[in-house]
Amino acid sequence: MEQQSEVNPKRVAAFFRRSNLGPVCRVQSTSDIEAWLASRAYFTLITYLNNVSTEIQGIRNTDWFPISQNIRRLTAIFDKLDSMIVANPPAPVVLGATLDPGNKGYRRWAHSMLRDIYQLVEKAVPCSKCRHVNELGVYLSGSFGSSTKIEYGTGHELSFLFFMCALFKAEILNQEEDLAASALVLFDRYMQFVRRLQVTYSVNSSNWHGGYSLDKFQKC
Image (cartoon, rainbow, N blue to C red):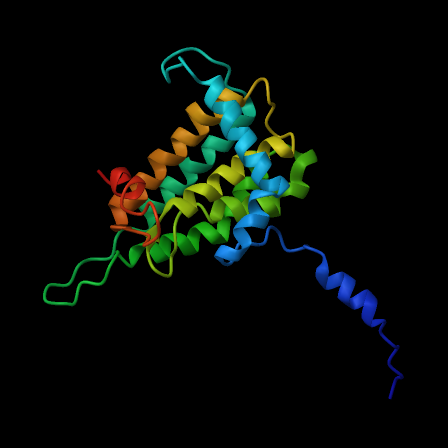
């Protein structure tokens, strides 16, 4: 029997403290809000929202503004996700059966999305930025709703905002060239897509604050 080498418990503990599996949700309860509001991630998010809000004032979607190839490649992700909706139509409604919230076809779509989303992100970003694919994929895959409850809420939209923030943080998008297009093209394409998801699969509103304003409005 081979003698096992001794494992340094401090090194093991240090390894598991490292975040090597992508972003982790740190806000688990109301007691975490104070730390979140003082975090760099919160500052990055608010800075992006302020900057992009200022940038797009007075600009219409039909006006001219720069749209880079990176923006075009990222929006093309939604063309692939659209094709997954076609490949996974809503489950037929059986007459007389108990109507559960949401259509189960959404879960088939979500399975296809999770299978391919990281490859889609990898193809959409420059090769030199592929180290960011894992983090970007987590944010993007979390922005389409919950396949368990078949619901969509403001938290999922927030996940997409973090996806866009991460694109700028990783310098995949350029602050000067892509700021307006990130909202007027990329975010607009996302909103069109999640509305299609909601209508196609009868996705429900999340039962959280805001769930009866933003989410209900999206489904109209």
